[in-house]
Length: 147
Image 1 (cartoon, rainbow, N blue to C red):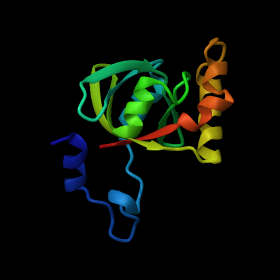
Image 2: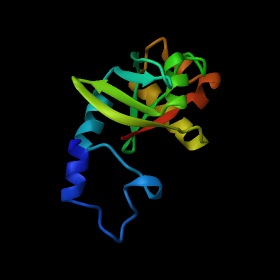
Image 3: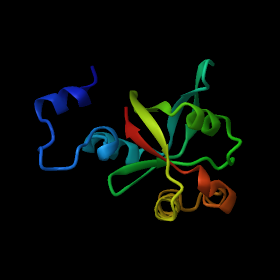
Image 4: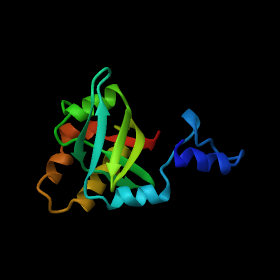
């Protein structure tokens, strides 16, 4: 059992607030996990094609307004991106932790702009930033939620 599910069993959401489970509401990482993700220069994403072996790829991540986002700078043909779309059960490896996650498409204009702005801030001066915020890569934006 994850420490998240144990915490929620001890302190379930208030009944008059939107559900933090399933489709009715947003599920979020703990504030500690969000801080770790926000502070990480790079993370590894673990993906697996349906019926294939799991593998890891080093990627960038941004946190904006309590939500974690990833995007590929190699475009929609990137292996890890294709696998995450086909099988959204992914894991993020950061600072010795494995965060089981779900990758959810976030291709709406607001998410794309928030994530692009986050990449520009976090990776200012890195030559790969321009590719990360380039037009063809914008639809590869994914939001992560804990699994």
